[in-house]
Figure 1 (cartoon, rainbow, N blue to C red):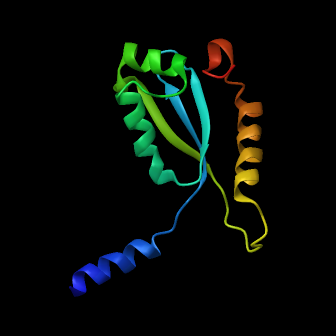
Figure 2: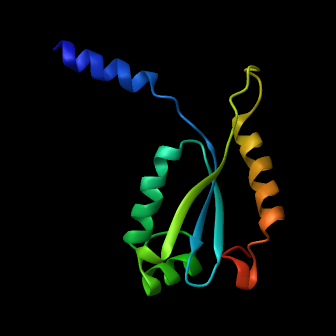
Length: 114
């Protein structure tokens, strides 16, 4: 029983990181940029791609065509935790996402955004 309590406590102490990630198609260089409130959900993103249910159809089609080994998923920026409790994490992520999309311009032949 003590082990179960220890595991629960360890889980509660795990730091949740939010930020921006990029999925890159290494075959053609196209990029998909997205934000997440918890990087642990990237496993869920991989799962949606592997099961053919990702919301970005073009990314999904190329994932199916080239296979998972042709893609790389990387964290590009972690949202720094704020001391100010009143800062809206969702809005901060939207700002970061806009910055990265503006910087990388993942449109047309360069990416999966429209």
